[in-house]
Image (cartoon, rainbow, N blue to C red; front, top):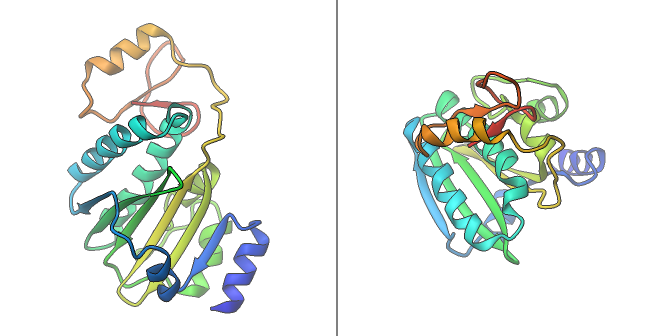
Length: 205
């Protein structure tokens, strides 16, 4: 455990950290601001909507990271649904900064696979949160793992200094997305035809 902790922190410049269950309990002993179950695909929309509402009210720079954070959370929660029986989502605020916890009830990630998850693009197993990790690592300021025999907790801290490289989508495309309603989870692109997917070339609504 200590070897993996030191190696991940050193190689990623402390952007990826491995913490023990004892460290997690000590650090996050207070009640979260928000706690929601992860049981079905509908929970992705529910969680995304609740996070957007709370962070829009409390985080002045939320608009700069809304798309990238929403994308990262969607990836993390989708992997819980895809690879484990379910889990929970928790939202904490640390010095007025949001901190997102995605917990699963799976068998837990084995330590020998953790470096591959971090450093191999697109790596995934049936017992891990590996799929989509490259996206999370790209847009999050820091990611913490807490691994137990009964599940894995992923702690995501967004980079509030992040500034999108692409301009906002044209008004006509924005209007088309908004007309679908907040329950819809597509994205718009700045191309003549709107596309569906994920990545920095898309604008999630």
